[in-house]
Structures are given as C-alpha cells and as structure tokens.
Length: 236
Image (cartoon, rainbow, N blue to C red; front, top):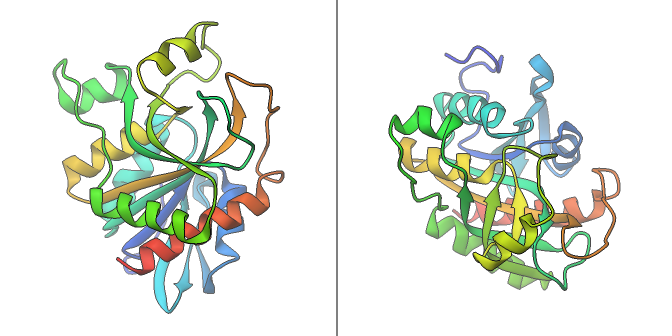
C-alpha cells in the first residue's frame, strides 16, 4: 500500500484530477459535493467528493516528474482508472493569453533520469494520452467555447535551466507549450494500463510578454478548466 499518501482503501475515486499546486487542488474541491479531505501528509493535499453524482478525487502531485510519479503510482495502487492533470504551462506559440487552454496530444521529454529507470534502456516511449479521454476533453472545450489549442507539449525537468534558444528550438519541433509532468503521466498510464489526459492553462509565455500568473490569479480560469475536466470524466 502507498507510503506517501495516507489514503485508506476505498477513499479514492476511480476518476482522479491531479495538480501540482495544492492551492489549485483546494479550488477544484470547492466544485464538488460531499467533499472529504483524505490526505494532507507531505503537503500532498487530496480530496474526494462527487460531481453530477459520481465520485471524483483531486490530488496534489508536486513539482516535476519524480514527485509526480510517486503520486501517480500510489493513486493507481489505490484504484485510480482515469487520471487527468489540470496544470499550467508556458506557451511556445504566439497568440495565447493568460488562462487559455492547451490540450496536449503528447509530450516530448528528455531521456534519462526517471524515464531511464522505468524503461531500463535508452528508448523514447510514446508519451501520449488516452485517445478517448483526449477526445472528451477537446469536446468539452468546444462545448463551452473556451479558447484552446491542441498539440504536443514538452516536459522539462529543469524549470530554471532553459537557455535563450529553448522556445525557438522546441517550437520548431512542433511543441506548443512547456510544463513538467505530462510525459511522466502519459508514459506511466501506458505502462500501468490506466487512462490519462491533461488540460493546461497558460500561466506565462516564452515567446510573448504575458507576465506570470500564480494560482490565485488563475482562480477563475482554473474553475473553468476544472468544470471541463469534471464534465469529461463524468461522461466516461
């Protein structure tokens, strides 16, 4: 059983939303009925409640692939069947605004580190979400008329190590956003046979001056994005 998440058997729903920021997890929990705090150990705040009568959990995964993988592994041990990351990203394309949504169709990543330890050989796995869940997320974005972009992102392990050519290089390879955890979620989903997906809010841009929005500044955008994810999961 999990050693980092002090969640009892039966407390976690099969549908799980994960986010790096515990403040965003608290914000999402406000949209649920019959909410119960199920974990606060290590600051990995987690709740279970109901949306449209169906159980759903919201769990903090921390920053970066190693932290996130610990949480992803443990919620899968606890019975998660569908996991959607609701996070933030830096835009790598022009024309975005704070709070716009990027729906990743896959994630580039740098081999080595946690990825090598999982694969145990120098290969590049297909870091892609579940197609059915991806389709539901895109469909909900279209229903609510929110401005959104669809395409691959790049998952970086080093927030402060990006060089001046980072945005130009990755944009030339087709990436439309940069974040830190999607590749690990998508790869683990394939390995553990669970459905995964992601919705990312633009919090800043590497190609335009948008400033940097924190969780409080993104609150209303997060609520909108959370309703997209909750509606998508409730229809699975």
